[in-house]
Image (cartoon, rainbow, N blue to C red):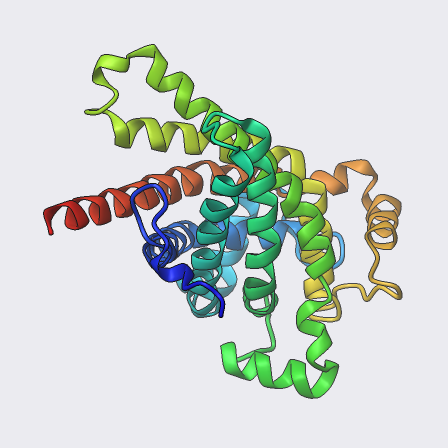
Length: 301
């Protein structure tokens, strides 16, 4: 009989506590930064769709003109449905793999990176379908009335496979994103604590937030081209966006480069950084705060 992993302690916590902490962190991160994500999605779909915006300011004005302030939140329900379970999987797998891979060395960057890759492969399988729905709802002039209307129409018109058409690209993007993110976060956190070890305990929130922001920004820049590919795959055929015959990364990249040059692969890099730096700061500080809460309640009993 398999062991009950929910009862196995690690870092003083149980598996289910990591899942709850991760779920709360993921929901907080995505809900807080959703308007920036909408701007990024519209900018990245530009080379396919008839959207006359190329900069962050133009994208903001375009959204306000067509949909008003509520346009920044189209699709937020889909992210709300997907983010909680996906981040619960993400952080719990990360913690379990970090323990397994570290070999007793909590400072192993390679263990943090490998654990992050395993975590993202698992969580992307949960989040990708709702991410497809979210991105289609974010497009200017989206033909869908809401989450379930989008789900129903995609199933009827394109089949279940349409929800996973970008999964391979998402994993290829998020594997290096997560490896860079987690390794940078753990290294930055140790570095910041070493700067002033005597006050590290009182400044934990600032340390986690700063390390998270640095990690999020760096990982975002490195993986922007693959994020552009993912967006165009998920939005293909909607609002005039191109359809791709093979759906391969090479096919989509080739189309983007032919239309917009190599600069097209970096479209949306600024809002992507503006999303991931504060989002990672929010996510990590919330996650660590939730873990601290569980530590406190566990020790109190």
